[in-house]
Amino acid sequence: MSNEQHPLEVVLTPEQIQARVGELGRQISHEMGKDIILLGVLKGAFVFLGDLARAMNVPVRMDFVRLASYGADSVSCGTITMTKEPELDLKGQRVLVVEDIVDTGRTVRWLLDRLAGMGAAEVKVCSFIDKPERRELALDIDYVGFRVPQGFLVGYGLDYNECYRHLPGVYEVKLDRQRG
Ligand code: IMP
Ligand code: MG
Image (cartoon, rainbow, N blue to C red; front, top):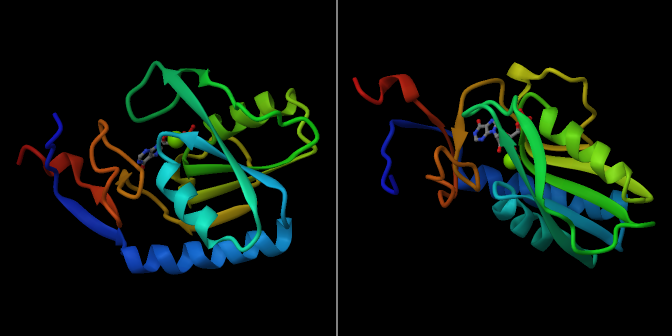
């Protein structure tokens, strides 16, 4: 299924994304300063983290975690596990969790709880997209690229069945029309 084709509706153009990520990089550099660790959540955040890191004007280190959730398709309501742990020692460090999208909030909440046990001095969250439609937990997201009210989104790292991550813009997948 590497060539899935669904009707895609533009939500964010590559130009909008690059402008906003540039702003975020400068803001985070200014507010968090140097010596932070960008901790990306694989796979979805890899594109955003790459652009964000290059938009920052202070030196940063980077690391990744990979989370897996079982029990549902596009809703992460199952059990979450960490299938790849951070490789840098987070003890005493200032960490910025870099996520692709916060939907129900369960994934970020779970990760923050896990990170709390790893001794980081400070943990903040930056999500490329905040999608409040299905939020189940009250969450403070420190930095948000875009707030998109609803819809299933792909592109710029976000996937549907592992497709569309490579697209430079963000699109809403029109799932209901696919067999029309
Ligand atoms: P949460 O735990 O419900 O906040 O879900 C977060 C994860 O679900 C994200 O990191 C994504 O991997 C996935 N997800 C949620 N909404 C979307 C979407 O619209 N497009 C692609 N992935 C999504
Ligand atoms: Mg994710």
